[in-house]
Image (cartoon, rainbow, N blue to C red):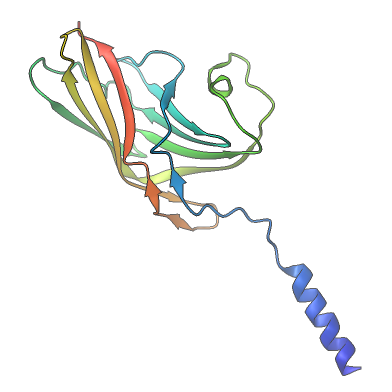
Length: 171
């Protein structure tokens, strides 16, 4: 009788373990190009994103953070996360494309499997005029971005310091 109880206990332990929980080990978007649906503007919110197959890193810049700059100088602007700008990490059920973010009617597939919003950090934007003097170049980097999953895990192994570069016209 004792060995049947032990066998039943082991079977219960084997089937009771849940391996369905999604665990995010690392977020790496350094080698992925920055994309957007509409050209970035200095007077409105801007949605910028990076897609890495079935993952996306989405940055919503606060309105006005892409400043007009000063020709001949480099201006550094900071925006805190999450109070001013938002950084979101999504995992999808399948590969995702730019159309997912840009279509007027959202697609049904792929489905968002997991979404984590940054709880802390800073968006740093260095603005300077290009060599032709026609555009301001905005180099966007992320610093100290910290994601906390629904289960309370803090994700700190991030490789997203250089987010990307956008341009706006010099008025």
